[in-house]
Length: 94
Image (cartoon, rainbow, N blue to C red; front, side, top):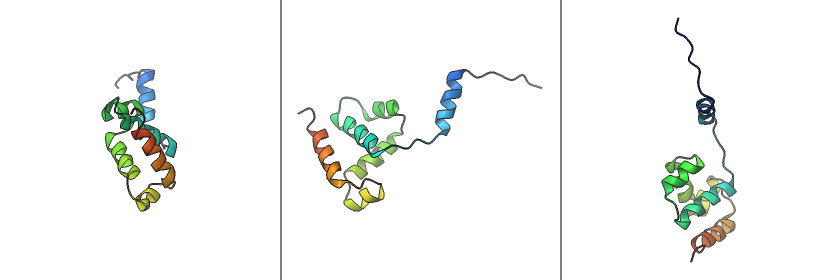
């Protein structure tokens, strides 16, 4: 029999977080996209900090600027709010 190795608490937490699928609210998605639009950090850095894959960020970003039907399919129904937030994000540092 092999002896059991004890995992560190950090590795256990990391493993649990890896197995749990996070759900992001509309506001969280918008916040992440607007942060990237400001251009202060790279997309990769933002994705690492938020714990998402860059491909997921780009999916949200495409839906953010997509037509109404795509926004409805993605659950981003408030088109007026999306446009307003997009405009604010683009002009945030100008």
